[in-house]
Length: 162
Image (cartoon, rainbow, N blue to C red; front, side, top):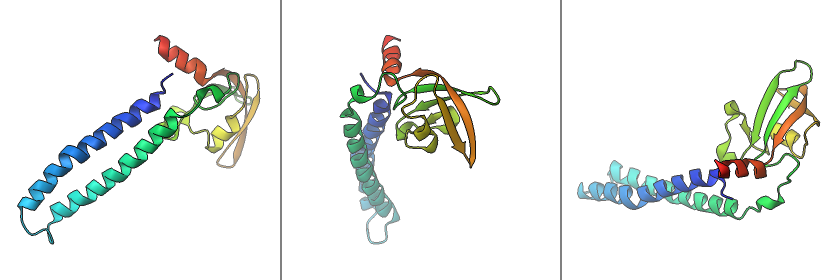
């Protein structure tokens, strides 16, 4: 099973490597052709960008390795965990909320994509359909019922089929 976050990270890794191997050498060549490097802002900027890219590539490679080595089979089939899509119902207002527990690289609160390590994510971890969940946001607690749950196993199976 291939995790979608890997595509995003590998794309950024390829783009960074291309910039490091193609664009930076060109920029350095142009800057060195200008002469005196001691006061050459273009040369300094290209060298700084080169160092940033090298660091970013190292971080991306490490993250891809960590995610690739993740054992998805250890994530529960019947409880919320990384990759779960969760629908909640506010027990007071009846209002519905949806969340997806995602890798930090995918977090987008406005889309309901939250990290399992976030306060809301932590309150949702390990829950099953029908469970009551208390979520505290900005000091205000609200009680929800977990109405439906799709685990990472179901989500990946669906994406594989489509």
